[in-house]
Length: 268
Image: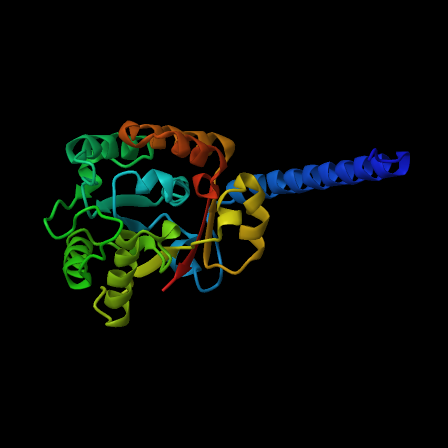
């Protein structure tokens, strides 16, 4: 049955209203992005000691696999660097699930170089009990020992890693959170060393790109990093260094994931 003139008119009006709403949201998101991106790290009163002033920060990014630093944490690394902080990377596996470990080690160094981290500040743990496997939870005590040794040897005062959701639910990611949570709760970290964990968001927020900026600005968090357009492009170039991992769906991820431009983090 053909729709009457009023039916088509109502549908067109609704579509126009939706497009107008989307344009308003997009415009607001861009304004918020410019405001937050040029202001450095935005921290709650609780988070200021950890990252509001980054000029004295010696941060350690603890990741599970080569590409985590670009795929998930680029806003934190670039945001800290913009504010004068220094970041190092401790990658807890070589990412050898498909026997590409040696290739991925080189890709990690290339990516970190673009993010402002020299090869001398990139450490890869290639241990037989810390194998890249999405179904395996790593031993928390073993991880804790590696991480604590690295913190103490390098005078680290800020550790950044995944939260309990691991962003993607990957068991290796969640193992890192467990190890850091144990170190923190057992008071084994050096005095003044803080731990920030990257917020896992729902699937809708994860893939709405710049439209997640208002949510990230308004919802509770301790530290927020938002990248400029130029910095976001730099983050994408860093991700492109991981050529062995650039399957078709990761190209879509780079275009639409909020983690390529926004990191919201909480203190343990």
